[in-house]
Image (cartoon, rainbow, N blue to C red; front, side):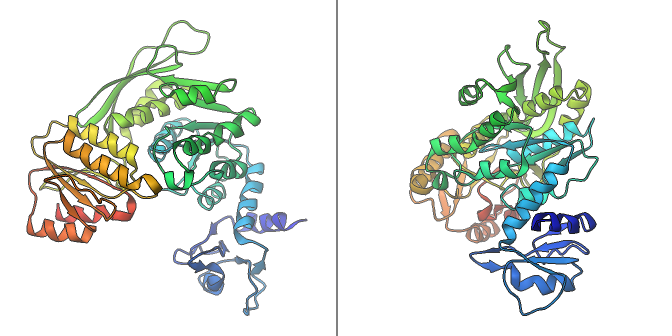
Length: 435
């Protein structure tokens, strides 16, 4: 029996895994992960004292305890344990990635699949080389479908996650200007995201292809696929019907080999903007492929409410906030601004935070987005962050969110519809108490 098999035997008796002693799991297994600014090995004793059954470490400790298990690399041990568990599971796995909308799409897809299947899906944003193994280790026997979100910041990341999760199906939401610094430009983003296609092609998997994006139809040639989009030659066809402020659409399903489409189905979502149209349509397509009844699909899509500062509409009693402050890149910023320009509110304000990980194009993209905001919207534009170095005339700029908070305290806003958009590092959600 090798070390992974030994760990798996312990895991079967204690099937909960954690890596953060600030949120210990009683009777679980603690993996002591380390990084540039932390060393999880130093917290092994704390984990055991908090009730962990075992602690997996990769350094020699002065603490002597039979519950401490020494491995060569704790992260690799966690990933290999997750892969071993994956091989024992009977469920199908659908992997979802993309530059924008992957978390929303993951949650929409899971909502649809839960209407018919025992479904497990990634919690929050656990989508990296640590989060995906933790998600896999949460899957219990009896789960029929698991929806795994996969994020990437550099080439090879999606391949690594596929090698751990071994997905049967894949969906890429879109490809945009995200993580350009680590990816080496847009082509690097394409290469990295379509590593999911590469894995599925090599393993006879199936891809859900949004044919509105030519890059996907090209990359998916010769693969097993299920298509969706706005043209009639797709298996699921969608038509955007408006956003006031929530996206509404109609869609229909045509099974392969049948000339007639089903009746049009109408969905009034609780998601902001045209940019969520394709995310909703993707979830409908996945539901059709897995034979979820169309009425159940529509109900799941209409019942879904966004959380975690992702396109949330909040009525504070003073203003209407469109809170989209979880993440941002030039592509999602542009989409949010274009959608906000269509909003019929009489008095609008835009608060934009900085965008992270753009590398050499950062200054250019921040300037472009600032100018786009001014050009699209004849209204107040407030910029936050030191990456905005060229400020358009008439726009107020604040080095950090705390500075804007002080300004809002002195200049309270009322009766406004306010778009708040920026990367998580800005902490723009903290402004909601002042708005």
